Amino acid sequence: MTKTFAKHAFAAVAISFGLAACASPKYVVSDITRHHSLPRAPSGESFAIVALDDEQDESLAFDSYSGLIVQRLSGLGLKIFGGESATPDLVVTLKWSVEGP
Image 1 (cartoon, rainbow, N blue to C red):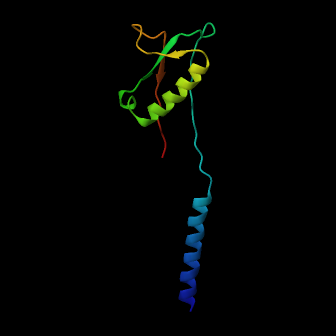
Image 2 (image 1 turned 180 degrees about the horizontal axis):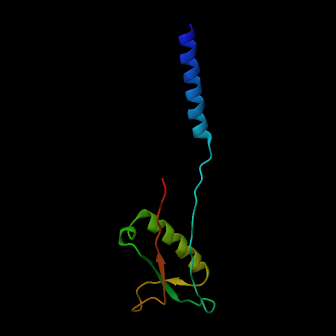
Image 3 (image 1 turned 135 degrees about the vertical axis):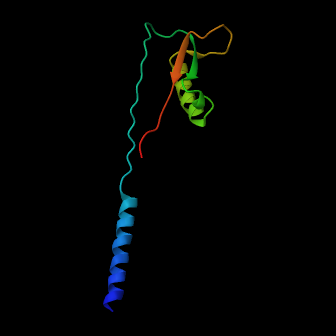
């Protein structure tokens, strides 16, 4: 009877620790660096978004992040570069990384 009780007690403690690990909060730490210099209010200049890392250029994350940037900059009065001139007026560079366990 004692061995059975010990096995059940051990199982209960192990399950408790397992459930406690699932219930603990998850944290995401983000370090964002943003640099810009707009000497005057935007007035229709064109911009292009370029990935600094070639591997990130065609990723789903790049599409998602660049879409958010396009929305924000378009709302400020800039327009996405459409190739109508040799180069865009502004170039937005984008790179991200994930570090940790």
